[in-house]
Image (cartoon, rainbow, N blue to C red; front, top):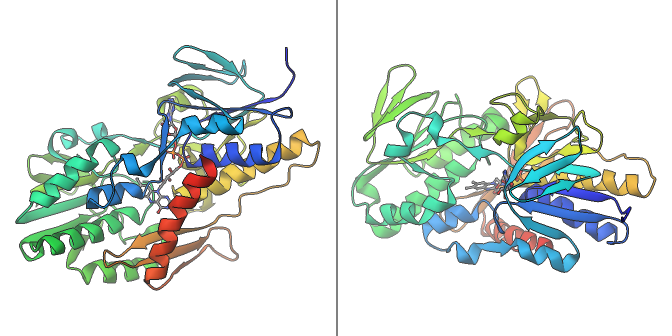
Length: 383
Ligand SMILES: Cc1cc2nc3c(=O)[nH]c(=O)nc-3n(C[C@H](O)[C@H](O)[C@H](O)COP(=O)(O)OP(=O)(O)OC[C@H]3O[C@@H](n4cnc5c(N)ncnc54)[C@H](O)[C@@H]3O)c2cc1C
């Protein structure tokens, strides 16, 4: 039997790929064995979904293959993970039981449209990769009517993304020459556009979408969806011809079953991304990292990546018998594409003193280039 320590990484998304690569770039296969498990064999940068909706991308042109990991001496297993057994230090997949010395849980958030009565039957899911082409076709065929973009639960992935989606849809409709006869209404349960970025940036985002005639409705907590109708908890209603929903997000069920998170919550972590179990870490969308009484680290790829690198550095330190000293720095930037061939970035420093800082840059072609580079870089360095 080999006594090479085994790092098992659950999920081959932003967090899983960043961790696997960081560890392998610093430790050879004679020092550590790495296995990534994912039920799918591809990775896509989240925002490419919006380009598929816009029609400037296809699904096939937007993914990288997880099978490429094996070229770097990172094992990849395409199977569903069915159980995490923290007592016996193993996980169960469809056909295997895999033991671990270090476990990194990077399983992301699950979209749960079934939590909103009537949504599955009457609306489209803006974040579901299986629905993007259909959404594109519906938008292309739309000549008049009402589009509702509705955030149906908090927290959700990439807080600015639905606003970006509204701007890209606005530009599509302009290009089709039908924008004047199609209304875009945006419904959010929050009182301002981007609570995670604070009131000033929220006002800037509001000004930006209003300048394109996108109407923002705040504090709209959804109750249920009927045919062509949203019904909110306060009894108010709104009609739509096409509903693009951001459904509630939950942690995968096996995470609750393992006891690491409470039902309807995510795995609580601190800046070291440790769980109460030795050598078991959690990163990215599957976690909650509290910053202040009212703020948690947003669910975004950049933060999943930063947390994953923190964990990787601490595992590397342990293997090298050094002190584990890395803490997640809470820094990152999220792009907002304007739909007019420019983008801006919300720059975030979650742990700056005395309070988290956020800054919205101006919208320029240079930042749109950076967004395109961001995707290229991730795909080429990870796969
Ligand atoms: C439209 C859109 C735009 C976005 N734009 C940005 C952006 O501009 N910037 C940014 O930083 N982020 C953006 N994001 C958010 C970003 O994609 C996520 O925050 C990020 O992917 C989270 O990384 P993660 O590793 O935690 O989870 P994921 O990347 O979701 O990875 C989790 C992986 O675990 C696997 N998995 C889960 N359960 C199981 C199981 N039981 N068995 C096997 N495998 C399993 C999944 O298949 C998945 O591959 C965007 C997201 C969307 C939807």
